Length: 277
Image (cartoon, rainbow, N blue to C red):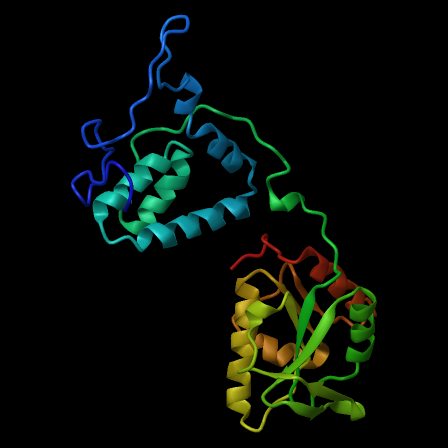
């Protein structure tokens, strides 16, 4: 760590002295004496970070707690872990109390700086949301529910949402009523994190148990990341055997004819952080 003071290297590196050729400020008489000094405002290291924290939505704060816990939890030296907790407690004591619990550090004793300003421009929760450029993954197996997919695909295309068919193999997958889908991805050539949401059209594979397992992994990852899940009438069995459950961002086909529009609206929102696990 090239910082002074460095607790792991006995305080080195340190600034070089004048005798060692280090920097020395040239002093000259002006009115008084010109010196190398900083104003009091340079001592304010935390108010801007505090304003950033104040401006975040709850889901963003939770994300930062998880991110800090990951990064600081990777540090092997317990003293450095504690030092980070104590320093960032000046931004928000509650933030670092939560982090300290996750990484086995002591809760911070010092409170955060007294600064209560916030800016709505900082939070992603105030972003204007549109469906254009979203990407949907459609899970299909042999005998999938093709009845509603035609209308859904039209609605997605009109909204600027692209779609990939995903199955156990690439190529033509035969659905009900003669509907065919060209699967351009398999469960092993793509991943749920690459999509803004999925649509479960049902069906099965040559190995039915493995197909269900692979589909469940896709559904569970999508659900865990708060993304849209659309479930056709024929996809309800696959949905039921996953860990996902109905709630915000889970659109079940109801037969009322508004399935496609509801999916577009849900994809536009991108993530549904009011989802409960």
